[in-house]
Amino acid sequence: MESISRFKIKDNLIPISHGYFLAKSDPLLWRKLLKRKPEDAEAMYHVALEIEGIAKKNLGRFLWTRNEGYLAAYRKGIKEASDLMQRSLGKGYFQARTEILRIQEETRLTDKRLTLVKKKLILNNRTLIYVFLAVIIAFLILIAFLIYHRSSTTYLENQRYTYMLPYEVIEKKPRVIPKAEIIPITIQVKGTITKQFLVNQLIRRYP
Image (cartoon, rainbow, N blue to C red):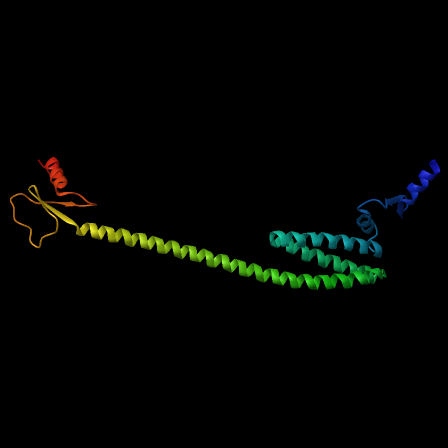
């Protein structure tokens, strides 16, 4: 039983150098192997696939968030994976040829997709800018309207003169103000006010 267990453990190990082994079940197997043996073609192949997988995840994050940082990470990862796969093929690992062609085709299709996404993003940004400008213009028009309305109201109020001669109400401004020993008092009228109310106000303020 013990010999079988030892056989299984030994079968799970890959000798790298004298006294140094790597476990086949280690998720970082190929990266560790490439670090130990920088010219190992098979390690290059597998690490290139891992790098491509990470790059594709960054592409997905970009498409979801539109964060340019993810797009830059995708492009860098794809280039690194492609270069490493080319090196693997150059070292004689011919299985890398198929992956190189696949990566090239997928990259071409992805670039087309990204071009459409960029165009759509530009159009959306322009739409937002137009909407923003429209809101600003509408706001300025509203302010101008309110200023004009206030000016018009002030103008009309200033034209609604009521001259108070001693206890007498003249609703419209006469062309000639009657001469009197007492200086007439001018009160600006706002809203509907009766003559009697004006007289009472005059009596209270100027008895």
